Image 1 (cartoon, rainbow, N blue to C red):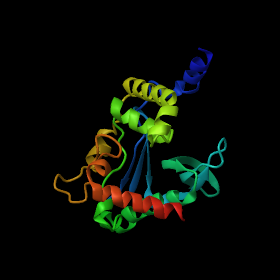
Image 2 (image 1 turned 30 degrees about the horizontal axis):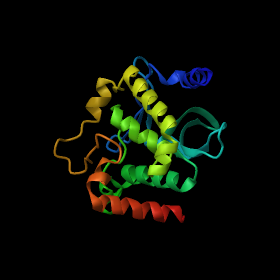
Image 3 (image 1 turned 120 degrees about the horizontal axis):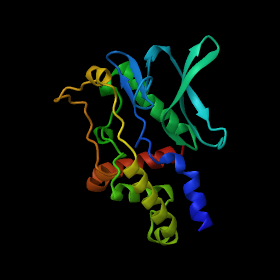
Image 4 (image 1 turned 60 degrees about the vertical axis):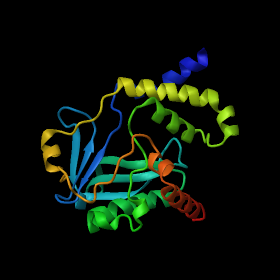
Length: 221
């Protein structure tokens, strides 16, 4: 009972907030919109050319790294934000940065040379199935054996993630930013978004094979 209470104490700040905190990159206006909440000053908007980006490391877990965006005033950091996911190796962080850089500097056609890479892999929906998938990924439960031994942790994590999503709000940018970032209905560069993480790879063997090849290549770098 104590362990369960301690577990929920550690994640208490995850409840009653937002399902995620999106960042929008507008290559037309060359602006970055960082969502932090609703209300006054809820969105940080900065020009793309004025932000300084670098790889940052967590103070509590220095083996983890991510992309940091800094707003500078000379040598003084006025504001900062993190982009995307954190990783244990710098290579995937650099790949993610290159994706963003190509989009802003070269256009959406340049971000993925292989057509099998032009899709969204992860889902932010709060369905129970998606929570289960993400919990299995987190605990490495990708074989029958690991699924059995990690079952208690996966079950607790899945239920917790689902409850968190139920208490959180979906982020909404202010109307003026929504109007500024309207995407044309027939834009050929709009990528499909899955209902659950890994959906397209599971449904399309070619996408799965391509994902495996990329993962194997990344593991050697």
